[in-house]
Length: 273
Image (tube, rainbow, N blue to C red; front, side, top):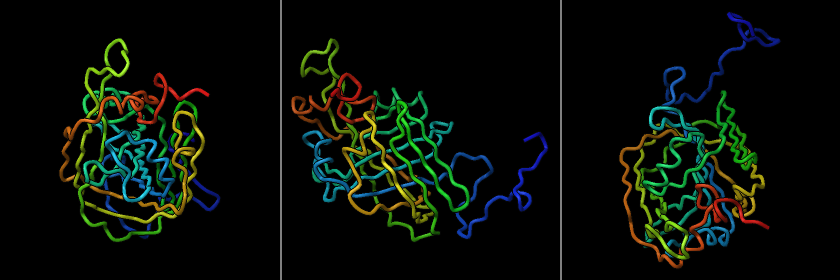
């Protein structure tokens, strides 16, 4: 399209889509205020149990939550996907973060080193046009997640509650001695309170594809109906703190992971064979 030319269709000039459901407004191009696309589905309880290190227990339900987003970190857009599963620690219900696939390299190392946040680099496509909502997540050449749906309009805001998330901070010993650590595994408790600004129901199709680097399709398959929503919220408080130690010997089989995630791996990559 040449400079100054307006995009058109066979019916005339293309116009910006107008939604019947008037949500929050931002300045054109603004990266603050994008909604999270949150997708929940039930899976096999044994798949979740296999991911959790001893000391972190499966939750009351075998649920997977996917959160796809664009958010400024610290002041540049970060597109990402968060995969978490229902899990309890010391009697507190929450979610165990399996991985944060993000498109920013700068946030990967320091987030994991400082807080144990399981970030790794991935390619994320996420956008909305009118009621249509599309997301695609890829890593190491494998597209492991796709979603396409349509907004069904505004729904009631969820009740305010504290979201509890569990990360693991750990550092194996220099030189790689068996069951040796420079910092033994500890649970990191992330407690966040949100204020919901806008909430929309989305009807759509979630497709999980096989990938050795992100084995969600094989280890956490969909075992029932999915639910999806566009959730616009602002955090009103957030606290990140060490919550307690895990048994270092029992944790050892969980210390080697795929990339920066908490998928169990071998030498930083997928298990062989």
